[in-house]
Length: 297
Image 1 (cartoon, rainbow, N blue to C red):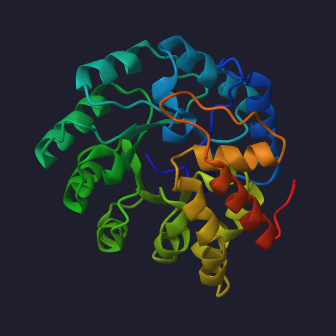
Image 2 (cartoon, helix red, strand yellow; image 1 turned 30 degrees about the vertical axis):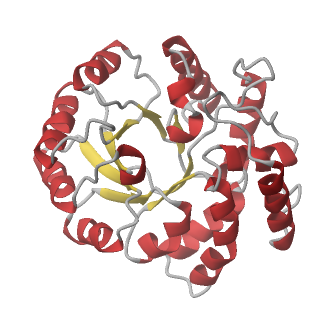
């Protein structure tokens, strides 16, 4: 199996109404907006979707809704992960995978498994998962880093693993994976601030928070980075202050603030997450103005 997830894929948010129910109207409008701006694939039920605050039934409803809106137009990746291997396997076995092209599965968090434990966890998923698997390494959230050696071991052990979303921030580790991975295995940036550095080394794109609200701009930055265009590094630098603001008070609070300013969603998150402070909300507004992105649809 080869990686089909290249270019820009927004890590979709989950819009909520003021009563905290899922706002499917805004979700559909948001996805159509992103697709109209040239995104290359879709990522549903990741961290940015506030998936941990959704009930099991809501998760099924959300990815079925996204799948129906997409209707096969773009490759679709859906998050299936956790820190209990048996439970993740049960969720995969109970899911309907029609219209889903791959799962995104995060490194088990909180219980800090060894590298051998990580390998065995993902190999157990590979044995039963009916679609390809994109690994997700994000040490800042999981409390453990999956090493380049473990990633390469997995990539060489099963063709079910087609890519990794790399958000370690360790450019030496990421370069090793890019340089030594088998043909067809992709390395996708999991960090908007690393779009240029990773893709200039031969990466395959980005799973992006920023692309929720600035899809056309993210697509341009990613394409220029993948093509090693001279302008790409300066483009990355131009967005880095905004990217910092997206995360300074938690994700997806920052990008939801942008979408609220653009009139696309209510500024609602489920606890324990909450909207950004007035200070950060204003700073985001000012930064959008400084880069010339005001109501830019």
